[in-house]
Length: 106
Image (tube, rainbow, N blue to C red; front, side):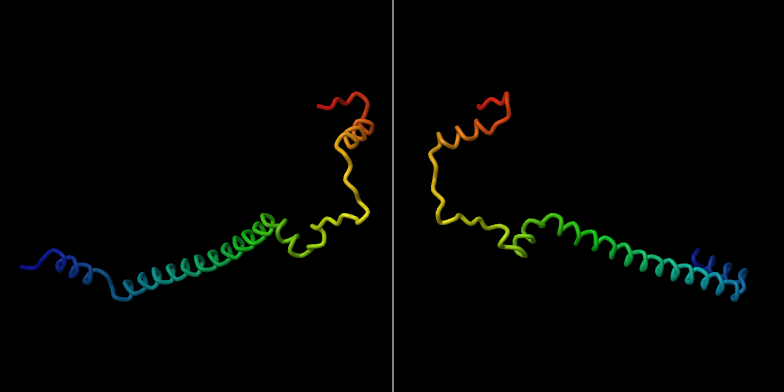
């Protein structure tokens, strides 16, 4: 006694011409190859695009550190040799004189 799969196989093989079966199989394979190529090129293109975005965003995140590494002289304060410290009261008095009218310290 034949099992069900063998019976179905015999029926399919008798009803379909080998050329028809081969052409549908080729069509299916060519469609799969097309989608594989589309997937490959879309993935590469989008991957490149996202990599560029990631690199430029990392520059934006670390711009202070990059600027300090490239221009160290801009981040150093030089105190003149003739500079002297002033008392706090003198500094506050000068600030109050320079303040706009109506300003309250506080």
